[in-house]
Image 1: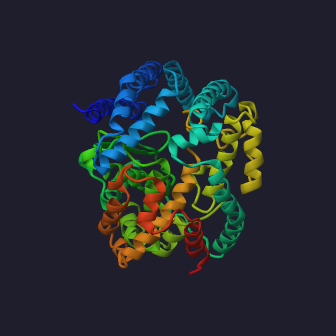
Image 2: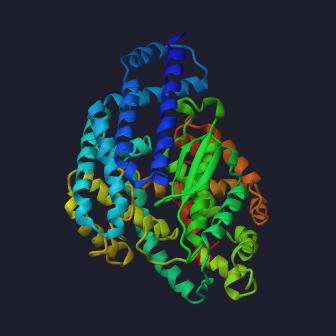
Image 3: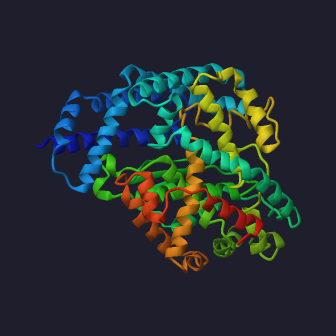
Length: 499
């Protein structure tokens, strides 16, 4: 075999191990009994150690050097580029750090499920200190190799090429207009508040509705499924995508929109280039692009007036059999319900106006943590100060709804949070481009027809895998690199009625 063919085979075997790990991680979050936690954490740590050994095999370096001068097809050349990146990122971390990090993250995440419910910051803090210490160790190792700052070296793992120098101006623009938009929207909506439909809403009814909407969006049930977890997520692999949600019998909007959000992620996975799924170039481009696909479906498409026209009779049929004509179940009220804006504590329940402020809060704190400007003990105070500044709310003593609400830090996912808002901006820009290319798209959504929109996304985003970098992908799909103006225009049109 040629050096490139050897690389192709080696990374295909690595992908098989990633496949097993992804399903085991899904099972740990969705199905595993609590007593299996320690053993599962150890097993995942061992698996990560084995894959790290394979990814740092000295032969890879030799094959990469030899293949670099070979004549390759464009997709092969892009695959080689991603192999080089994976090898570089792996060889900068010792195997012992990889295993210690996986074990600490697993223990902390499992403890978080208990201690968050108990509002027990004192029990969580020591575990989180271990996770942060290892994240700093990882950041230092990466920074020494790639020449980036500590935080940039972790951010780059989720959003290749993105830096704080690029993020800060974008987030400054958001911080400049979002508080005023939030105030104006709340004042405007108070003039005609949404009526809350009466529950309870059974889990069985909610699950059936969620499955129906997954089919409407185009989810392939031959290659995926829906389950329940503490925190909604999309996992598994493209041929076996696992999404989860969580249910509350007092309300149905959170679970339904959680399903739609995760279905957006799943559609991206299911649309990745099948012929390259065993290779690095066949994977999702980045977490921001992934988030753009979930937010495009949830926020841009499925909270639109057009889609609510389609959804309304489904909601009435699912929950309002005895009161289909009640004012709370009418289309105009349901649209107000699904676009309701308020200041709230919980990020995953936040509307699209206030959501970026939740993300910026976390970005600023985790950046200080990684760069040693803040210690774990100071997180609650830093969190409360920013919540009061950005959203006018206090979380003093309320850890459950404050700094313990997210799984990301217990799971060691530092550098991840900024990609949520990058994804929201990307979604607005991509949706605007799709509307321009498909003039009758909104009319199709009003009929529950996602074929044209999904086809456009398949062509311009999903099928590209990692063939293009982020800027090239956005340029090709929309004619521009990322601009915050599309996100602002979307928010002002939906919430202030500006054209």
